Image (cartoon, rainbow, N blue to C red; front, side, top):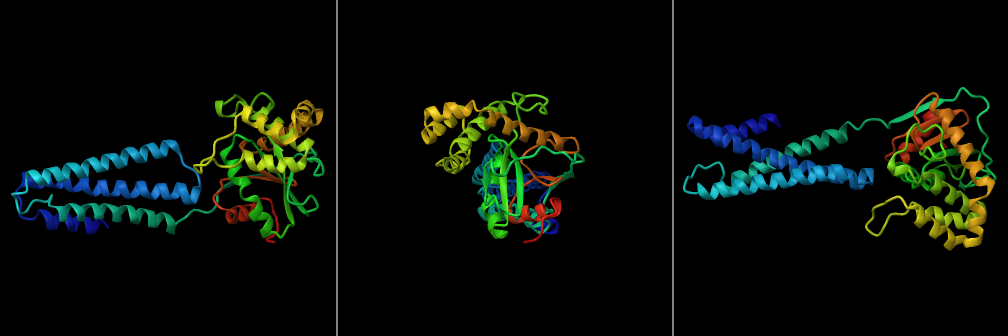
Length: 329
């Protein structure tokens, strides 16, 4: 690619005096970079939309600004060509401008191809708790995705405000199907808030409502497991634009009341079981951060736990087999 770009420059500027060469070389570099910036912006949009499945607002702002700068450079190059259109050897003629932009796009394409060719292995943190007396979670009482009689029941520590937890949630069905129903997931809320999780050192604005959202979700489950299935689907569902934002406490309460009624909701939200179940999950969370990461989502099986960085369900299956020592099928 470098040789290709050098050849372009040599062909375009041979025979020019030094001053003109420097000026046109500058335009060449800017046009190639403009094409590369446009190509990279498109590539990262593809990554976010179809590979990651989420958009980063800061990244999108950066890409948008870069794309606008590239368009300004191209527009200015065209204006410059118009001012110099009497010069037959102008490096800013339309064909040459197009070739330089395509050169930049090819450079971006090369970078994208290299990324696809050298994808890193799935990333995860794992560990084994040294505590023999980990808090017990009752599979018959807690919310389970899959069959409670499955031989492999994975505890899932999560937070309703966590986008990575939401992504993990969307993979459950594929994983259960892969294992032909031999695996299930029990949901264990571990809110990342100091209000109910003593292992969190300080509060972050994005997670200040996490404890209340956990209580609302568990109150729905404790009252009506069938209603919880609808609630669980709703709280992790994307909006009409295909984007997902954590639900507010008011929205969650309104949905819970709609599903189970005001009286049942008020009774369940103050039930000792709700607080006890959340605290059991929090204690599990605390045992894992003694030997590793304190983030969520976290999957636990026996004494083993993993905190994966998720891309696809197939990758997660591979991570689970390695980190949790689960069988292939």
